[in-house]
Length: 156
Image (cartoon, rainbow, N blue to C red; front, side, top):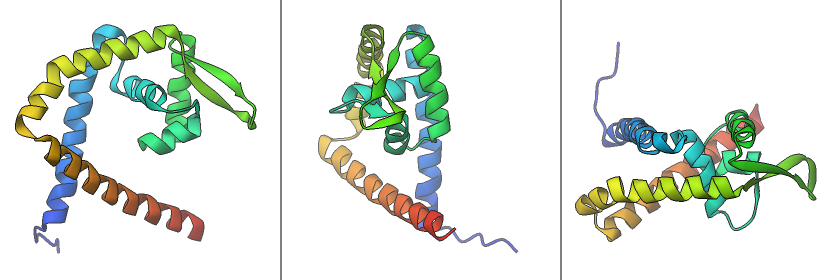
């Protein structure tokens, strides 16, 4: 028999799933004219916002994606001239992902368009304080999930 009791945390999880789905759909539409997808834009953003060049594994970990998915995207984006894969002096096999001039321009166009189309609308319904608090709480939940995933992987 199914447990149909509704709990707030369950509803929150499903709402985050629905939000993620909508963000991906809206993001895909917003960056399509720049030759990007949400996934490519996510990778470009991870690299653009990093303090130093990142490896594929670091991007995957930071963005909640699989290493294999990021590697596939990196290969495509490298072939398309958006990023460059450079030798990593710290690890022979883990190359560093670096934006090309074309990649920087694509990211800048996408983020500028996103901000003009969506950010202002979102800020109309959420104050900066609410945004910061929501981000803090979501990061706590993500931290719990990451910790549990690591523990389960280490046990297995």
